[in-house]
Amino acid sequence: MTLPTPEDPARAPIWENYATAQTSQASLGLYPDHAYAVGVEVNGRHLRLRFQLSRLTEEDEEDMRDIVSELEALVAQEIYVDYSYELTDRPRLDLHDGVSWIYATKAK
Image (cartoon, rainbow, N blue to C red; front, side, top):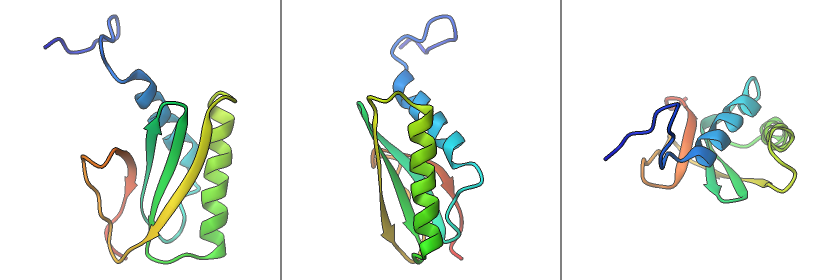
């Protein structure tokens, strides 16, 4: 197996990495107060932000919409960005769930 290098990205998931990096940039300073985890699902031209929250407030909803807006500004116009959230009592992260988790915290 050949690993990617800067000179030869080989089969590296370039679009997925770019979308994850842009999601991280879009989220700076905007994580909802009650967020346990924030991630992005990349499915071609569809990016879905995923939020795990301990509870939901109007401010949390505004933060999630702001992150979507920031991400839309960072990617091409042909890219569809939306979000979903779930209320949970603790973060539930799975390396095989198709989500690139960019933020996680301990239970509050």
